[in-house]
Image (cartoon, rainbow, N blue to C red):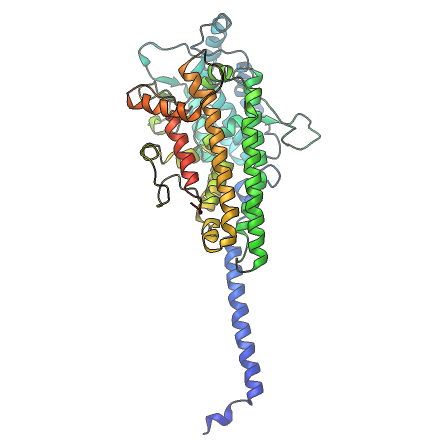
Length: 476
């Protein structure tokens, strides 16, 4: 049989060939698009709101009546308890009130939290209330001779651990408890916004503490637009056309501007929060277990097996999910896993390279899941900028904006923590680099370093974070 005679005429043959090729091409495109869609997860799945980001859209509800003893105790603690180490006249006058308040808590029954487990907002409220009560309890205790461990009563410890396990976060006061869940709107007829926000609970009762939380909240809310940019990028099906590349370039420049706005928000805390009030009246309330160094008393959660294994460092700006998200998006290598220039200094190597990952354990579990999702997405804006020259400058602009933000954070930390830790009477400007170098020299000589509220050595930690950001720049 002549096989050639069985073939269709050339025009018809080419038509069939073209149809098959076009069908294969379209099926490949559709497969890639379906793969991109299968990798997409809505931010809503991670408890991220389109308008308020990591904040709940609505104020957390009050706990049911069965848990009134918790709510009443927290209301009674605000403005009525003093730091146990404060020996001022006003603080001493509150000592009897504080002892009665703590004695009442020790006499409480251990409440079952099962009823709260069906509602994430009630769980969040329970975490806030119990975590604030633990901080009030521990830090209102007068100093204990001999540095003995501090016992957190089981009436607080057991339900807090139970609630924390459901939320997937640390059983201690966190950034979420002080900022994200602690806010209420000033005008209930208007949505939560940068200018419609106030705070329900305060340790010191001072405007300085309130303004500190407001600055933190405004930085978080300004970051909502960053989350939209990140989501847009991760939803792009391909990066092969000029329109898409142009959008990525514009979004990176927008990102740099937003980061610049957040940096200005951080600086705005200075006229609104006095460093002395913050360091001596506010910051001690934030400290977690062992925050003052390895020899400091530890917290023991009564009724919890091996409570020494719990994450109990306390709240920190390092727990801001917005900052972690932008770090992951821009591929900032805090853990020094990659070879980038300039090479890490000895101080960078000495810093806690697991700090950022550890801080995620203090975030609500669903927010941490979102960060894990970002860390595993196949699209990398840094790798894309390495391949496409027109994206390198916009990418570098965003990275350098983040580096400048960390420079400003160092200045604020220097003013509010480092300088205050060295002299109760210090005032005025803080030359950051000189102060940080002085601290490192102090550390090398064996002196006690200035620490963050979680107990980390502040100077090496901040410099390492700033330098890791600078190393992401492509045009060195």
